Structure formats: structure tokens, C-alpha cells
Length: 389
Image (cartoon, rainbow, N blue to C red):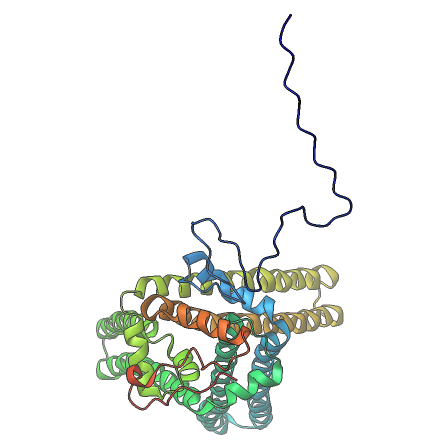
């Protein structure tokens, strides 16, 4: 007869309710279980992850900026576009109206004199909207730099707060934008002056052709130099606003930070510009084309109906251009700030400073502005760190 199985121990009685089992000890306050060793992704309290950014993140982060805080950012861009368009219309439309009214009753000699004066007057008056556009563009750069910087640490500022912080650095921004505009005008003047000089100094067609070819080659050379310098100095507005230094110190900082990162910065700037321009053409051109086709189909004779369709199409095209121009300006200004933050993460460990700032803020402690460069390593003329408020 086989041996019987050993007796089983009595089972523990079932626990009633949902309380802890016998022998369970409540952990002390502040206890946290140890996680298994391995890679832990850096925190992302806001817009950007607090680590050096990959190429894809770097390229698409400006678009997320617009989506994350649309009302203040898009509103600022739209105001800039409207101010520029209104300034141009307020100056140019009355001027052309006055010029055409004077030409109606003018004789041949008087008409030539009026046209000559109109050209000079138009060139002078066009400086007014250009200057207003420069000021508005500089202000938008400051707004977007502040929005990206505060959004990276999880803050979301309203319209008024963004404008107040940007206004605090508006004069250095305007000065920098004016310097860029003057440099572009000088380069254009050098190329145009060379062509005009060749046309005046020689009467032979060959000499004129040679002058034009030399002008084109000179223009291409200046274009290459402009691209190189423009990329090296692309983050100057971000440095002016966030580090609160002057133009000269910002230029030196931008030149140093972009060392070794030229092609990466160049590629991101060009790719985003191409994406924006292609998207603008895809939206605007079909509307203009459809309007033209409708005008021909509705009224082939080109009378009242065709004129009404043309006017409506023009208005819709202008509105779309303003909206797309606002989006383009906002994204490109935000891109500069994103590139600046990425470069500082890679070269100066800004991601660690941002993590420290977020931790202190979450703990209720006062923290210094993480974007300001310390006094001992700051460029000459910079100010000491201030609280990020």
C-alpha cells in the first residue's frame, strides 16, 4: 500500500476588506522605491526637452511654439504684418494718387519733370514703411525669444507679459535690425553702382555686358558672404534679449556659440524657410489662379462682373498673404530662439541650469534667471544675474 501524502498546513484565513496584509509596515515619509538602473529620459516641463536637441526636434519646435501659445504669438505676428502693410499703404497710395492727378493735365516737358520728381519722392517716402517694418520686426523677435525661453521651462505668458518683456530690450533690437538693413543696402548699392559705372564709362555694348557680368559675379560673392555672416550672427537677437547684453557683446557671443555648428544651423534655417515659402505658395497661388479663371468664365468681355471677381480675389489673396506672413514671421523668429537654446545646451550645459531652475521653482524656492550668463564668464558690459520673474 503506497504511503499517504503528508498533511497540508492549514491555509491562512482570507483577509476581509482591502487593508494591508499582516506584517506590512507603512513606509516612512519621503520614502521612494529604488528604480532599476537604466536610461531615464530628461524632463520636459514645457516646449523643449531639457537636453541637446536632435535635428528633427530642432526643425519642428518653432511650429510647436505657435501651436502651444497661439493667441499671443500669432496675434503679435499679425499686428506686425498689419502695421507694415498699413504704413506702406498710408504713404504710397496718396503719393501715387497725387502723382497721377498732376500727370493728367501736364504737357510733355512737365510730365517728364513730374515723373523725375516722383521717382525721387517715392524712394524717400518708401523709407517710412521700411523703418516701421524694421521696428515691428525687431519687436516680434523679442516677443518670440521670450515666449520660447519661458515656454521651455513650462511657463505660458499672455499677450501683455510677452510685450512688456520684449519692450525692455527693444532699443538694442532695433539697433541690431538697423545695422543689418544698412549692411544689406550697402551691399546692394555696391553691386548696382558697379553696373551703373560700367554703363556710364563705356559706350560699347561689349563694355556694358562685361560690366553686367562683373556685377553679377560680385553680387554672387556678396551673397555667399552674407549667408556665412548671417548664419554666424543668427542668434544675436536671442542673446540681446535673454542675456541682456549690448549689440557688440551679443555679436561676439553669437560668433563663438556657432563655432562648429555652422552647417547644422544653416541647414535648419534654410529648410524651415523653404517649408514656409512652399506652404505659402500652395495656399495663395491657387486662390489667385481660380479667381482669374472665374473672371474669364463669368465675363469674357472683362466688364463689371469680371472686375468684381478680380477685386474679390485680390482682397482674399491679400488677407491670406497677411495671415501666412504672420505665421512665417512667428515661426522664423521662434526658430532663432530654439537654435540659441540648443547651442547653449551643447556648449555650456544650459540644460542642467534649466533643470536646476525647474526643481527650485517646484520646491517653492527663489531661482535666478537660468539664461543669464554668470558675471565671471559673461561678456564685458553684461549685467549680473537677476531673478527670473
